[in-house]
Length: 257
Image 1: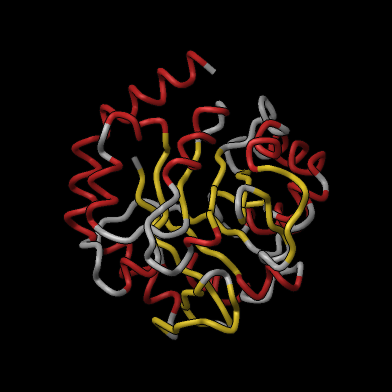
Image 2: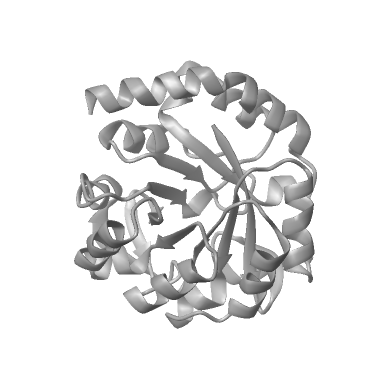
């Protein structure tokens, strides 16, 4: 079970949005590379980064900040936001990203996602962000007619490494992850699912150690880590203790999918 600390980039700074609203951003650090190194030093094993400006612009905007992060840390980094074509994907992987996250393009051009997943095995994830069960795109500015599970089903067997599922109505407000919808998605697909949006407290971490939650690959935490509601060392210790159960749970899910 992986706990991914999140760095959301807006205008070169580490921020957290409230409900996906770019006008409701709290700045937590103006040095993203230093923040990434801090997370690595705390013992995290994987970093989640989003280029918020890029998600709206449809191209990399905070690329310089991401490249500086990559130069300063050794643990793997996954990036989403504004990655819309094979050129973007290949360029970022060449720069040292472990995994790219495709969101809007997964709705607009699923064939591109499948092509990328085949060309770059293990390095392409799909980001599914939703409001009331319907997929949102273009930096969460638009809601599509697709349900979360319908979109996930499009990529069964395509080689997608993971699905990052975010309930936008929970994001950045410490309301707790929408566990019911997240687990429903995880049970509906053989693709590993990472929970995102609303991880609020150590109680959420403890919940993730329970057998029913072992179908998940992990969860992403942002604001709760920045403001100390989640103790990183305690959280990582809890999840590592639970990892054998998580591995067995995912194995069971794979055999039944």
